[in-house]
Structure formats: C-alpha cells, structure tokens
Amino acid sequence: MKKWLIPLGSGLGVAALLQQLLLNRPPRLVALEPIPPGRSAAALRLRFSRPMDAGSLRKNLQLKPSSPYQLLGKGSNFSLLLYPKSAISGAFQLQIKGQDRRGVKLKSSSWLWDPRPTLLAARSVVGGDQIQRFHNNKWQPIAPVRGTIQALLPLGNGAGVASVTSSKPMASQVWVLLLAGDGKPILEKQLNKNPLIFAALSSDEKGDLLVQSSTSLEPGSKVELSRLKNWQFQEPQQLAIEASGPIQLVPQGHQLVVPEFEGLSLQTLPPLAAKKEMLPGSRDLSSFCPQPGRALLVRHWPDYRRSLELLEPGLAPKQLWLGTEALLATACAGGGERVWLLLLSGIRKPQLELIELNKQGKTVWRVFLPDKELDPGSKLHYDATRQVLLLLMRQKSNNYQQPAPAKAHLINTNNYSIEVIPGSATQVGWLPSRKLKKI
Image (cartoon, rainbow, N blue to C red):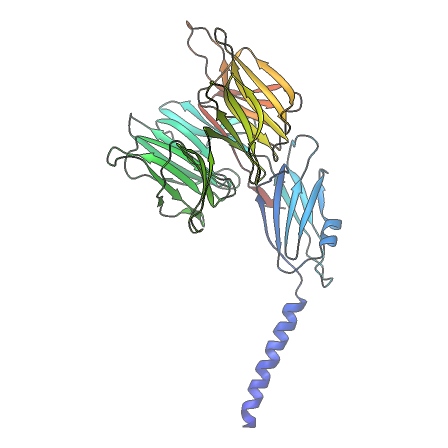
C-alpha cells in the first residue's frame, strides 16, 4: 500500500509546484483591438491574463502625441477611450505598463495606433468600376474591375467591404472583399448564386452582412444574414422578415430595424429569443448615432412637411427640426450632441444647405452650398477622428450641360471649410480602422 503513496505524493507535489509557478507568472496583455467608439472619437479594448491594478495602468499608460483619454474597466478587461480636442492628423504611439493586483509587473509593450478610418470609393476606370482606397493622397486599387458598382458598403468592423455590381440589367451580384489591417486584399467572395434583380446591404460592428434581394426565379424578396467568423463568411441564414423598405442592422449587433406599413419595428436576430417593438407612424430611419441606442428618424406629415427626430432608449422621439425643405441626408455625433442635416430648398433654383443642430434642436451653424449638387443617393458620413463630414457632390450645371463628375468632399465641422478629394467617384464610405501594430 505504501508503494502507491510515493507516486501519488509526487504527482501532488508536481501539481502544487505548477500551481505555484502559474500564480507567480507575470501578467500578460492577451488582446488589444479597436472597438466602436460610442461617445469618444476612438477606442481600444485591452484584455489581460490576470486581474490588473487599474490605478497602476492609468498612471503608467503613455500616449504620444498627448491627447485626453479615459481608461475604464476592472479586473482583466479595460477600454481606452480617446477624446481629442482637435482633429487627429496621424498615428499615436501607445505604451502599456503597470502591474497586477499582486504587485507583479506587466511587461511593457509599445504599439502604433492609427484610429482614422480609410476613405473608400467606387471609381470608374477602363472596363467598368473599381473599389479603391485613398491612401497617401492618391487613389489605390484594392479590387478587380467589375461592371457597374451600384452600392458600396464598408463592413462595420473594418474587416472589408461589400458591393453590389452588375454587368447587365437585372443581373446583379453581391461581392465581399476581406482586407488586412493595412488595407491590402485577403479574400474576395461572391455571396449570391443566382443573378439578382436588386440588392440592398447593411452591416453591423461585428462585421455581419444583411442582404435584402430578389431574383427572377423566386417571387418576392428574401432577407439573408451572413455572419463573419474566423475571417470566413458562414453559409447565409435566411430570415423570415417582411419589410416595406430597406432593412438596417443595428450597429451594436443582435437587432435590426424593419420598415413596415404601420411604422418602424425593432426586431431581435437569432440566436436571441424573438422580440419585436413597434414605433407607429410614417417614419424612416435616417442614420444611427455612434452611441448605442440613438438614431435619427425622418417623420412624414400629412401636409407634406418633414421633421427630424432623435430617438433615445426609453424616451419618445424628440423633434429637432420641422420644415418643408427636402431632407436629403443626416449624420450624428456621440449621442446626438451634434446633428447635421443636408437640405434642398427652393423650386426654381434648388439650393443645398447644411445645418448643424444641437441636442435641443437649436441651429448652431448654417452653410449654403449654392454651386453644388448632391450625387443621387449619397449620404452624410461623419468621421469623429478627423471631425469631418464626407459626402459625394458635383459642380452644379444647367440643363444644357453634361453633368460634372461627382467627387468626394470633406467638410470640416469646426470651421466648415471644404476639401475636395481629387478624382471622380460614384460611391464613397469610411472603412473603420484596424491599423494597430506592435513596435
């Protein structure tokens, strides 16, 4: 009997030794990744192997060039939120140091982080349209030339870009191009098997892609959700949803906004339990705000007026603007502290007008764009890092002139100066940044 006690005791001794070694092991930075910013201009998630001393992390973290920030969290999970007072003009050098709750030091690490999103565009070239990125003050191709690009949608997590293309009428295709952190292409995939009559796209911050489409082979339209996992799109999941217009994924994931004849509904996505909330009235979803749960709605009134409403969790929609002008596009900063409207006023001589409102609906700034025309279907895209609005416009022309080519315009939201990006484009959008590397 005693012979069995020797190896058993040895095993217990080894286990105790291993446990002691693990307990004395220094903490490690397990993950560092960009996350949606919310109220801040940019944000990172930090995950450690052990519960950390939050005060030590805050005291030793270094950010160059210096910028206001917050480090929130406890235990092993923290978030770095950036609140720059001015536009970000380059990458940050981030140094992470500190100790865990035992007092054991974390090995210092340095990172180069550029939180600025990348400007993507569909541009006409020989043979058709091509997706390009604006990098180092010039356009660079990142995808093959494919017919006409009808829609361009950067994925919400920055992993790539989806597009709807067509080489002939009634025969559209949906393509997804996955990109590395430096913006170089990794993989391109066609999602649809049969030609599409039409397709509408939406993406969330998880990188999931919703495709609302119809084909000549099947009656009506179908809604499919493709989930991104391990840099591969899973087999599309068909959703039993009927809508009266384009469906939008909620940026934070797990939900979607569905236009119906009775109003707008907020519905959950599988695997969550089915749940539906209804907002009655003649309303359209105009844009989401970066802070979760906030959105801008356009309400249509019987006398042909339109109003802009701010929707916040647990509150009735709040009217910010009411008028007879055509409301073309909107954008929002934070939780609605700054709201922008692009209006078209006048009948004989229509004129573009950009208005900034605060959260109380008071006009803060008004800019007239008398010599500009909005490219049909263009939206307002806000970049909190550069503090600019992106939209696609062209020089106004009379009825006897060939329309001028549309170009990407950046409107500075601090002084409302305008920068025109050289070269024409047919679609534009911001690709969220994943530019983060160890140095």
